[in-house]
Image (tube, rainbow, N blue to C red):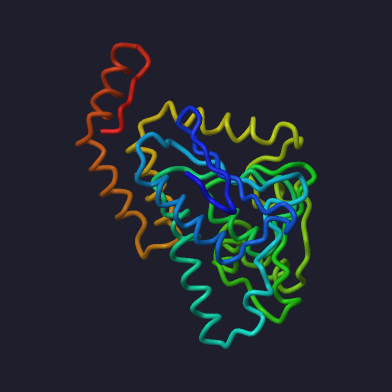
Length: 259
């Protein structure tokens, strides 16, 4: 897949996506968001892809925010359209993907960058990373799900503090408050992300997808328990379930095919 603002490649069933605008601190402009929407859709429909690692080029920034110059003169209606389109095509698309996404946060994750990381199912941060939602310093609020996902991850009080003060947190603080899953040395960032996905790759793909859907429903649906019950039932109809049970009884490793 050839993109202008992304580097993407599949290795051993993992799709590596790098936002490649290092000179602009990997800021999200319209073109980059369009390419992200495309690569997310590709990941979801491609059986070869078992998981995705999303990161930024260089060591300074994962994504330092949105490209402010592009929307500096927007009207309220245009701003609402910008947020809605981005949420549907990129941020919600990541969260609702059947493939697990891991954000490998290699530096600053600010504004839209932190929102992108929070849309991913898991986050691994370099020890030097700094994270925050500084939109109120521009007279804005987070527009790509930041107010919602930050609250889900760290709780209402901490979310209000971080957003209204526009404060940044270090990787170690982000770990303490539940904003990231792991912190590691910069050199070990991709290794840790790969380690997690390599474990997931050993599990039943349809069950992984069902688990993600059910967990998302716990915060995004009226009754997540009903989604869980329905997805649990569907698993019984899969060949992977039969394989998993057989392997357990035979005391052997299961070989799942995603069907």
